[in-house]
Image (tube, rainbow, N blue to C red; front, side):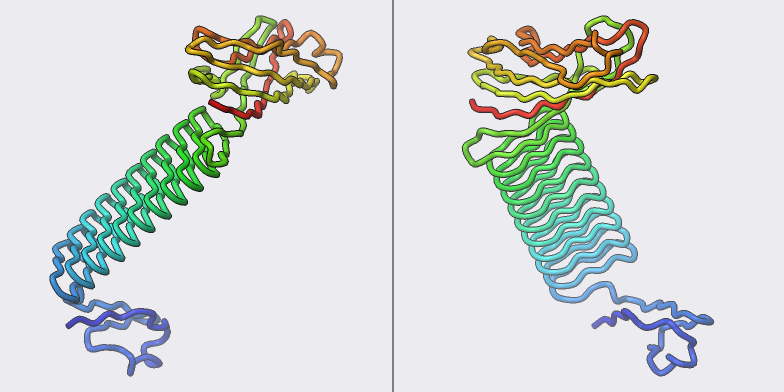
Length: 314
């Protein structure tokens, strides 16, 4: 039999003396509790970690300062916490709760029914969700957050692009920093953004990851996308600016990427100093993507942010 002491108010020892157990030590204005052997309660439990605690039935706390409670729960890493039924917290600082959930990433959190948080600092919640990307978050039902910083929510969504967000039903966010939603058909709508800094008037490709210049707006095989463009450019020194508008239709047919019609870009609002800037969109069949190209002003550094809102079918 064990005793646990919690939530004893702090105060002078003289005011609380009648509440102190034999093995509690009072300091001047606080209490420090040094109760021994209160680490295991219940049947069939195993507790081997220093300063660990186990309670319930058939549970294990083997990590230092770990805590397992409930039925068949296992906290096997330092500072881990498993509670509920058949949960496992197997990485340092991990927390698993609910039924059948597993937190295997360092400082990860899995809660709900059969959720898995395997990425570092990841969080999975709901029903059978998986957060495998570092610092990712999966919530809802059967969702997957598989990239670093990705977020999947709703029903059977998948966030596969870095820092992407997939929501609704049956949507997949596979582009960098993509935000998308689905309606259960597998089709989706959403947005991405091109961006970067250009010095001079040489036509320069803009990428989804900005100055890192490596991630494109990929157009998968046998898909069609309608895209609405809104963007802005600014002279970084003079703070003169121009905006850009366009709509376009792009598709990939059996591996060949092409525009349907033209992708005419207009600049309805523009400072005269940026009248020579150009924003253009083309089908990049080599990289199977929508290419965004910007042309600035000679000897001037311009900053560009171009949002692309889309609807996709396949």
